[in-house]
Length: 77
Ligand SMILES: [Zn+2]
Image (cartoon, rainbow, N blue to C red; front, side, top):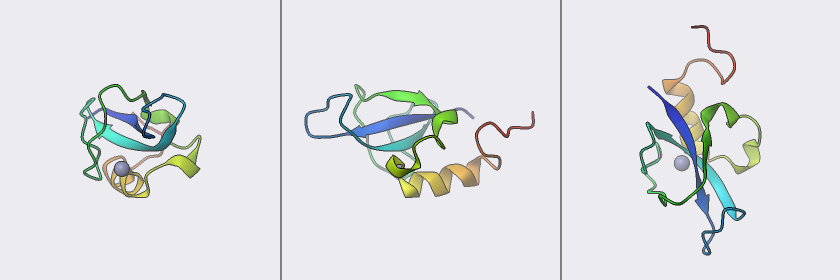
């Protein structure tokens, strides 16, 4: 299963107004926490999850780590 980070943006929807990052499966628009995200919102690879934890959705983080036993960069394929 592939995960991506998708941003929740501010009212203007500008890419520089990221409120928080959520995790989606396979480029879905519904985050693991149930929030529906804008198709125009910025996305980035899930390996970036640990880089700016202050802006991460805590619910998505908990669910993501449950689905992905290893932290990004620690995959033992
Ligand atoms: Zn979330």
